[in-house]
Image (tube, rainbow, N blue to C red; front, side, top):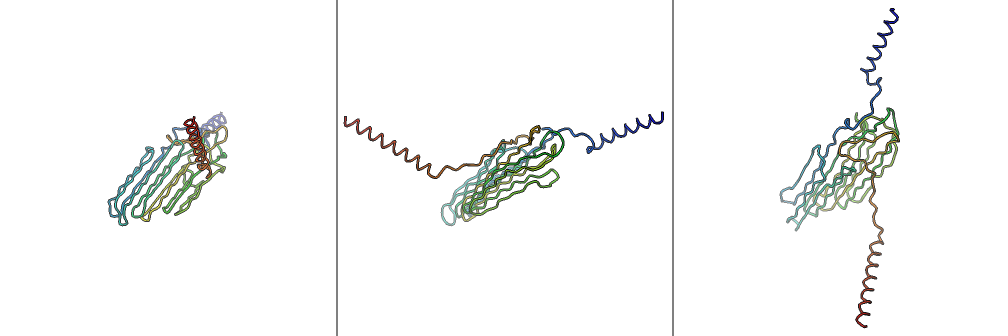
Length: 264
């Protein structure tokens, strides 16, 4: 009888320890309700030398399609203008910033989104393909982008930044990482563009994408998508000339027809 009582007590204690210790209990796959909200920041500003600043700022848990500000006036060296804007599509997600100003004016734009991603399914480590495309372009201004992917405890999985003044650079990522299922990962997308005082322009664009193996679902913060990034493909340099040539041939053909009709 004592052995039976002891066995029952041991079984109850083991069950209780499993319930109390999450490391021993079978984890339920993470779900959409477990995903924290994203946070968005958009900031644009500009000024004419000796004129008041004009700026806009937004920092909230609500998405924005973007902000913009522009202005013109008379600076120390003559007419001046500035334009700063952000253009965002969180259903992809993509964030971008651009700034343009001539000498005697300043412009700045920044767009940041901080969101969460997780991979729902059976517990364990899984291979996750991470793709991202971004570019920075500058003709005298400063262009900056940074993509950070980190575990919820702050351990970085991937960090890449490009910070240039003049020229262009591309961020192109297509790599598989071993990540934990049912675990939150933070994604920070930061784009900044500045044109300060001496004129110039800068633009920045950034777009990441996650691919989980079969049997797993990719979850993101509400309002954030996970669409495959598409790099911009420039038109071949000869194409505009070719199109112009076709138009010119058509014009000459119409003139010939008109002359023939008049002669008849």
